[in-house]
Length: 223
Image (tube, rainbow, N blue to C red):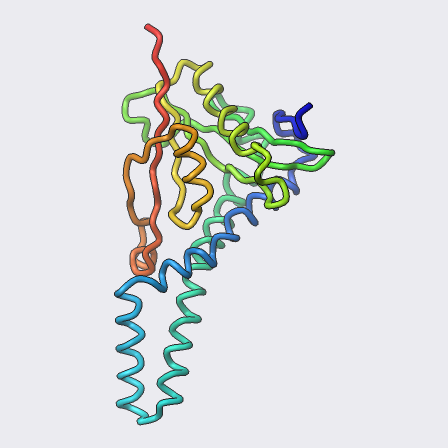
């Protein structure tokens, strides 16, 4: 017998769903920060900062402290990207989930439940730019750490694929970020193909190397 069941979202799930989503996004801050630290342009900024303060103050200690401040600022930039995305989402589609996902055609929201607790979430929406095809976009996928490794994420992913198939769609698409390693590895194992890699649309995101990945899962079209 399965340790969990997948069902449609209901209003009593509201607070748990929002908390799971927020934590599932912001937990990737540290990974994004470590990725930024490996970028040559970031190290170039550190070197310039060190040399500049060394020239101005002649103090090794002050120069090192200036670089440490740079590092702290880099962490805050990464955190800001995740936190601002979460806040935007909580004020947008996650503000009134019932209205946003169940009062319009082509939208849906599911939760996985285990022993009375929410063990995962996922949503389906029509994509903003379908490109002339009937597609479904997978969004809001998140499974709390304590429930990972139980096949819940795969089951939620299949739910969206089945939803798209039943609607006669040609593909399921999704966007994820490079720091969300477990997520994009799961999607690739599920048969999603990476279509392109691109920076989030802001100068700050480009500076710290915040990369987005677009995936696609093709569905057989019955004619």
